[in-house]
Every structure is written in C-alpha cells, then in structure tokens.
Length: 483
Image (cartoon, rainbow, N blue to C red):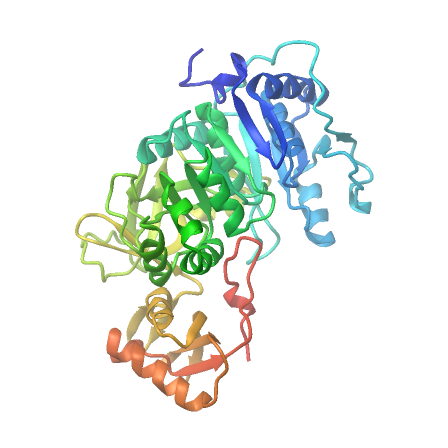
C-alpha cells in the first residue's frame, strides 16, 4: 500500500491492534475497517455528508466511512445554535447526516436523511481511494466576523500535515494518544483522531476531561496527551496537590498544548511538578498546523517553534512588506503557504480571494520572530494588537506578565478608545481570591507590568470580573468583553 497517497493505510490492511477507545468501548483496526465499509456503502456517491460530532465511537466510524466513500465530511458541533445550524446546513447541503443511535434531529434537519451509525460491517472491502485533491472536510469557522465560513480541506493537506507532525514529534504507530477534545474542530478531529489512524496507532478519548482520568491513562499505555490551556491549568492545579498524579503525567513522552497560547506561568507549574515541558504548536482551520516545537527541540514557554515541513511562514508589516529582522520584538502579521492550505471557503470565492495575497494566506495572527526562527504569537491582528501612544503593543505579552502576579487567576488584555493615546490598554482580571482594596490592587498590577516590561505597556485601566467569556475550545472571546 502506498502510504504517500493513502490517507489511512492500516484500514486497507487491518489487524487486531486497538484503534479507538472511548471509555470501556473500543474498536480494533479490523473492526473499524469493517464498520467504515458499512458506512461507505450507506454514503454511496454523496458529495458531502454531515456528522453530528458527539464524543463517541460512532462519530469516528462515521468520519472514517464517509472519507473512504470519497465524501467531504461536515462535522457539526452538537451544541450549535439553531441559526448557525441552519446556515451550515443551507451552505453545505449535505446529502446525508450520520449520528450515533438515539439522535433526535432538530427541526432544521428534518429534510435531511439521517443514518444512525450502528457499527455493522459492510458487505465488502472499502472503496478505491479518492483523489488526493478532493475535499475531505468542510470545517466551519467560528463566525466572529459574520456567518461561519466553510473551510474546504483536501485530503492532500491532511495527509501532508499529519506526516509533518509525525516527523516533528517523533510520533509513531507505537504511541497511544489520550485527549478529551471536541471532534468537530481541527485539534480534536484531525490531529487527535485522524492523526493516530493515519499512523496506525491508538487514540483513547476521555469523553470529558479530568486531570485524574488523563493521569490514569498516562500511568497505563498512553504516551501522549493533547490539550488546551484550560485543561493544562487544571492539570497543573491537581499535580501540585497530588504527587502520584504528577508522577503519572511525568511518564508521558509528549504533552502538546494548542488552540490558544499556554501562559508561561502554566508551563513552569507543570514543569516543576511533573518534570515535563509542554510542547506548543500553532494552527488554524484554514491551514491545519503551521509551526510547532519539536519533540527534541527547545521547549521554550510562549513560543510555537519553527514551521513544519511543507509549510512556509513569513511576517509582514501593515503595508504588506516582508519583515526581515528576527529580533523577537518587531511585530508582523503571519502569512502562510504550503501543502497544508485549504482550497477555499465553500461557496465564497470573494472571501477566498480576500484571504490570499500573492499566493500567501493571510492568517490575521500577529507574531514576533526570534534569532533562531522561533515564532512567538502575540495574538489576533483585530483584537490583540493595541496601538497606544505611537507604540504597537501585543496583548499576550501583558497577559503573561499579569499572570505571574499572585493576585491574578485569569486575565484578558484588549484595547479601548482613548482621545489622547488613540487606544489605551485595558486588563480584565479574574482575581485569585477576595479583594479588599480594588483600587490598590489595580495600582499594584499596573506597577507590576511596568516593572517587568516597560512603562508604556502598563494597563491604563484594570477591571475586575468574576469570569472571562470563552468558547468551547477555551479561547477567550475578547469581543464579548465590555463595560
């Protein structure tokens, strides 16, 4: 079997090694291949197939079967709102919806044929492999600047990017990956599920994350953990209290964090308690993964390493000119090109054209570059770059500084209009405990930032809140901050 072009070689020549496990339910590669064959027969020649992406074995079988049939999979968040669901279904026009048994379709799905995935084997072998450039997934963006857009990812991008990750992280069929990530995003579905299946390894999905459950897996057969910063924050809390849990986590071959920046303070807490340094990587729906720290590389807190094989990255200034310096200070927008890129937004040639500049995808993310090429993500161009008093300031640097203070549990930094400075720096802080003197604490935090960084980077305003608005991947939704 030609692994270079076959997305899941082991499904063509399956064996009795475990492929998937969700709690006490598991499938071997032989069982998965048979069940995927059954789904492929059901899908037939459908162009696109929606999958109600609950954290269950049936979701993985549905995706594997639909991909084998040559259909493009449209993963749907089971908690999606009615209006967004109506938009996704109307835009993608799936010929079939696959779901776990017991699924009750919302009204907007009543006109779409539904097949409950029952894991029954098909009557024959898997269909011939589809063309590499054919769509594999249509992943919808979060819709922060309008209705969600369908990102069309070809099989070529998934194959090439997963192989680059395997090389960078020394990831093989011998690894057992544990995670509790949603199966409707790039992180949990492509990296966390399709990754192990491509390599012929194993994935153990926790269903719902808990530090103890992750530690129990790592104390057993699991060798890798994928998570988001909120998960690692909880893991750090429990590891500091429980030496046995910390020891189990310390056995991991690799801890990987993504979907948002992992604060430096969390890096250090995990390192102190477990002896492990977390690897960070950087990606998005349109590009899968762009860069990351290698397994054998410098696991430097706050940095997302070097571009993966097959990926080119450059930084540009506001005028679109290339930034050549690597001083870890000059901020520029990240542009990407390579084998990892999507082919376009479904039904949106206008948005696709706008997203590219001379063949480079404009990510909207901003970063600095160190002398050794390591990238440090500052944030989103639209929300995390603050232009104050003639300076261009990254919110992430201020957030990391504030998180080093013992009175700060969580923080988000953003801009507010200012008649004198243009924009002023505002910090929304979730305090670590009761505050007896809010004004005094705000002044102390402001001075703390001015001392660690430079005075012009200090918050001009500190607002104390009970919690920060987050999406399902744990990312802070800064546009929801107000007042």
